[in-house]
Length: 425
Ligand code: GLU
Image (cartoon, rainbow, N blue to C red):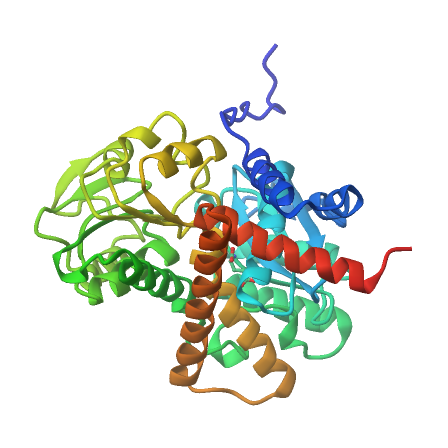
């Protein structure tokens, strides 16, 4: 029987990012010979919180939204990780994303644990007032979870600097003191950092450039396809383009776009800013998502959703180098196929760690109340990204494993050692 109370059934995800995370964790844990007690301690999240947020919509109706915050680990420091607003958010996904944050922070060596939050909602369908009420309700519900020395949120898919400003404001009001360090990715006037907006894309570019150097790929004779044109995709495309690489394909929710001679990315960014944030109507050959992923390009940057490269299309990928701008764009089962085909993958927990690195800088600046120039932020972030890349590269050579397995080995080893040092009661 149909009921007006019933929401349409969600499209069943064919793949589960948590499974992909677990499989890789197991592989690295095996290589490290991880003690089974420590293994269990690191595999599962330390804590998870769920809330049902009740909001009055603009039309006067009342709606309830499911919200999550998962703290995978606070071993290396306060837990850190973004908040995702999407109608696909679910507890499994948030758990996987939280664990990825732990490994990501460990790979780049910043003193944070990992967390992730999410609200199941469609931000595109909501007004600014509705989003503000939802964000304030979420912050209220999580007031004892968040904290500048406990758990520090940041932007992720579907959220932005404005959402971070509401979190900062609501948290500061509830606690009765201005607390900018409770959240990163804020607008600059509220204590946001120079360079944070571009940080993830910049880290993707640095990873791409470093990998191209290792693989002897010449930027000026190379082509690249970028899947997703949000903050990460658009800025990665712009900055990789500035290295001389031709960006021949881009995409967003409206589809894929191809130009043999390459896009002028700053112009495309201007276009979407005037066009409701979408690529719809862009003058170029229209292509499908699947076609974009399997184009004959040198570099592929998946910067959209999880599980885009799977065992079904991995064999058709023609790029020599994949740099993961998104979290979890490659499903576990595709890993071996890509390795067998000599496709080098710079994994998400390394490639997109530039964002959380500059979040760390933002938090440091908030804690000391002194702000750095953009030049200083970029220089320090670039150095961290290059060093992390080099370490992962060395581990991959030492164990003769992919860069992904190497990144997990590096991260899990660091977190496991910390666990042992801190002790278990
Ligand atoms: N959401 C981003 C990520 O997945 C940034 C997290 C942060 O800055 O804390 O890395």
